[in-house]
Length: 389
Ligand code: SF4
Image 1 (cartoon, helix red, strand yellow):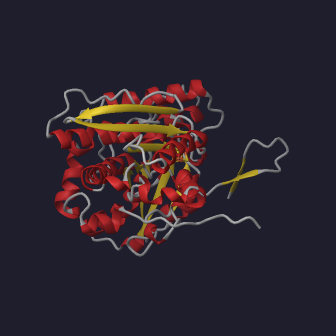
Image 2 (cartoon, protein in one colour):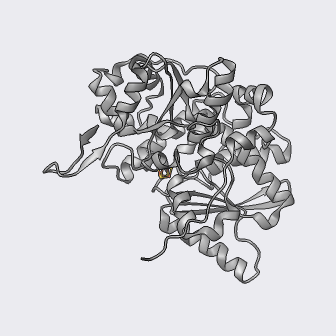
Image 3 (cartoon, protein in one colour):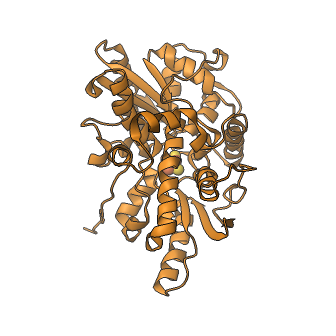
């Protein structure tokens, strides 16, 4: 299917894949499960005339239920899961494998693609964690499928993402087929789901709110801030600092990773050890940070950073390529405020305190970085150089 985009003469069309999701919903033999990414909930309202940053989580769950999905889950749950895995990975590298530092986050597929092609000297520094989208898909087709006695081949997973690169990520390599079939079957952008909701005659802003379904839906405030630049770092710090010090954090907010500065740096004192972090958004800023690391390594100097968060889009996923068109910095600021509001109103603010995450480890995964966690939630990278013809 195709929908007209913004070309005045209709010569350019934006390809749309919502028909695949509708076909799955209409097939009685298929169990359809949907997940929504953090940044979608603060931007989709714009497509219905609402102010940027309006938090639409509960209305969106209702709309997806009315569209006919069998289960409504949330990518924010898997963001919490990512923190459990990546936090553990960081602590291990920091304490036992300093040569593999800095650890670089891996949840932005546009950046992963760029890295595999143009910056593959950084492969050893990449977190082996899959992105939340892929973790959620893998958990749906394993843990959820087994618990409900459904063949993963009969499950169709639809992700609603702020991001066009997520479409390519879902088939990036064999690791994205962890149960023998695709972890995520189709990816729809915020724009595509907004069109589908409108075409179905659903008035999103005036819907009653409803709850997410259990098992893979409940999320902490740390899970939701994945949608903004600095959010993955802050979420990781909430868990890693608490694990290293063995104490509950008196204050969960970390200001260092926040804000629209292209490169943000901070040094933290964690149990008497210095942890240096950097957060970069926008491709040029990412290269700047990596060049600082390369220079320090070449000169045999102390590492400038231990942990780096990278996001290809300005502002992070709230400014993603699949969001409603026309975002400027004012729009980005409002969407960002919506995300922090979602965090602040969460009762649980740290990933390792999300009760459903703890249950998933207890019942299924064992512990972070277990054999099973590696099979389902981690990935490898390839050197894919681009040759000039
Ligand atoms: Fe996608 Fe942009 Fe988010 Fe990267 S930063 S995951 S490209 S929306």
